[in-house]
Image (cartoon, rainbow, N blue to C red):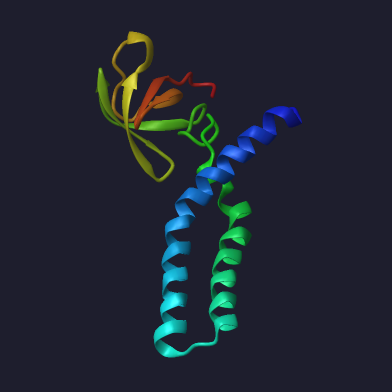
Length: 137
């Protein structure tokens, strides 16, 4: 991808990550304020504690970034294979790795029998759209 495409995606991901962290930062800031005013903790110590808490989140962002992205790579296992747990006649269940997903047959294809291998072609919400996987895959 080009940098112009990558940077806005990174900015949105960082903003989403920060939005989830802000409540924790506010809670720790309130606890630090209370520690200074009610328990006599030195101001520099309280600020250092808040700073370390925020630094922890900054250091964890590279490890957690993918969890906060909203592209096709992180929204379900498109392109992966699974095994049908219950026959899919309209809707059923498939296992993809260690996860169990609700699934629908893509494009109104014929029902898929239990134990058959399927390929995930799309994800809509928490439902996978699957098709029977050819034996060669």
